[in-house]
Length: 182
Image 1: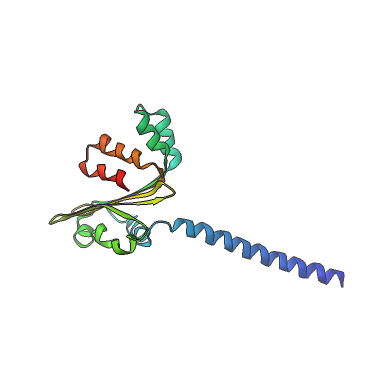
Image 2 (image 1 turned 90 degrees about the vertical axis):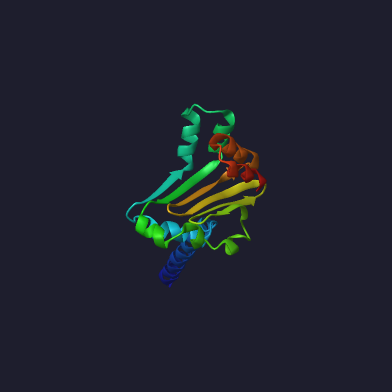
């Protein structure tokens, strides 16, 4: 009788381990979903296509660049605040005729979590810059370009809004000055 109780308890322990593992996996996957499913779908759909570059830069590489690079203190602080960068660039002319990354993103759905910082719609080019703030920091910055070339840049981190103003100073791109208003 004692042996059957031990086996029963061992069986329950294995079930509990499975349930706990599933719970941990669900928590991990739900953390990845902080960015829109549209954005994740774009990365999943088009990486690996011909003439499409998909690049992931982990935060430790940003911090390494900040540590060894010759840059201003504000630039260094900005790099230290980034936890990851994902970039998707399509130079595939056939694909770009049929796909526009900006139009693939459901901006109305994102508008609840993200602030639209900039939208530009030209005859053949669209540009959108979105930001998501949490606890006083910018957690996500999304830059999407659609048209002749499709580009999607997703920056995750814990960035101070003032640091994003540095982007304007560094790049000279007029539209980047609005990122401090997130």
